[in-house]
Length: 320
Image 1 (cartoon, rainbow, N blue to C red):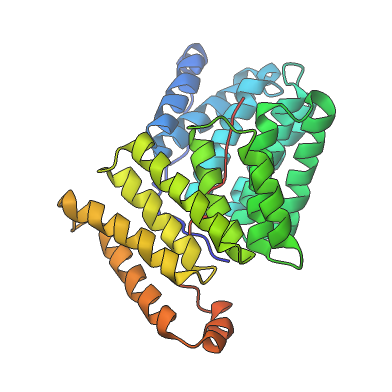
Image 2 (image 1 turned 135 degrees about the vertical axis):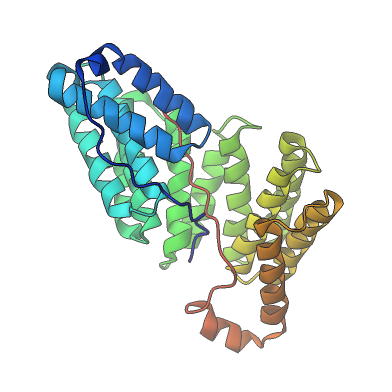
């Protein structure tokens, strides 16, 4: 199973020169880093978070074992992952976990959320065994400390389902369906996490050959996309396009083409046919048509070595 990863240019920033004034502005670095993250200004967010951490390490060592410091480390880990530096992301997130275990202002859910984040980074590397092991540890902490109604439990549960679906060992697909159903009944309806979990169930049911259920959830996903993003929006087109690729990767080409055609219609009606997303969609559709015409035996032989297009496997995040 392959994932669709948006390749981002990541500015190489020189190490900042610190001064006494940095200590006075340390809170500004923290909140400005969060603002940059929300605006998806990854290089700026990473630079500010790094500056916050350096000031703490140099002048305020007591802050190193605190939630704010670990939050900035976590932010830097995600920026590293965005730049495809997964080993760096894993190392930073492991440090977050170790420090949160010692910090007096961190609760068990803060530790569990960081472990869930670590599981994501392992999955991005394709190490699903370790991703599953980490997610299982996070689930145990949340279940034992807060019970299964904790909001972070459902998010981690949905990620576990996605890891199983991607690994594809014997029984994994069935287990993914079970966990995916459990997760979607716990995640608030209409949220981003709910939309991602819904799209994932479309794929899980395709993997076990239950196309009636897959189509049922597919219709729900389409309707939710319209409500959440608006029928004519690039976000809705991207959601449909990504879902089509995920379905093609489990060889449900008919449905993949159906969702791809919906996405193409949105791009055309919005007259934005020169965007990279539209060009990529057309390339994927050509692959879907070609794969659909291939004999089943050939499809099975090539599926493990030449996945169609590019795939998105949404991973759910929830920061305390």
